[in-house]
Amino acid sequence: MPESARFVTQITASQRQLHSFILSMVWDPVEADDVLQETNLVLWEKAEEFDDSRPFIPWAMRFAQFQAMAWLKRHRRQQERLVIDDDLAKVLADEAAADGPAFESRRVALASCMQKLGQEQRTLIMQRYEPDASVNLLAAAAGITPKALSDRLRRIRHALMECIEKTMAKDLSA
Image 1 (cartoon, rainbow, N blue to C red):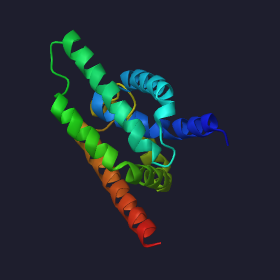
Image 2 (tube, rainbow, N blue to C red):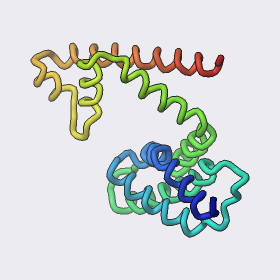
Image 3 (cartoon, rainbow, N blue to C red):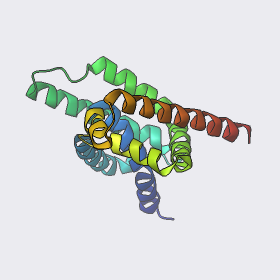
């Protein structure tokens, strides 16, 4: 496979993980999309510097970190409130980069565990994480109190966490 084809494959396979990594720093999905595109441009510009014998994700995450930090700096100037401290952003980025291989395993485990939920539970979790969704709005739509809905969500999240932990432990022992 030609070098450029391998590089395209690496970039394509890393998009979801890079987006999640960037989102952990900028906290806005739309802005994370923009930062990801900026990161992709930088990755293309630096393609010749990539050592194919080394893992791609940590290398790409370094550029994603720089792009996210540049975004934070630009937006800090534009906004009155502090978005995130540079030192904290670096610590978060370093931890996320170090945890790269486990991320994909957890993502796969989460997808599997989501499928094991009942349709109603799965729908509720998905609705909760839609943009502009709130517990109050969802509770009103369901005709229950916000506390009752919060309790329901807590139980579903707990079940997901247990399922993910069991799946990860099973994968490690296999």
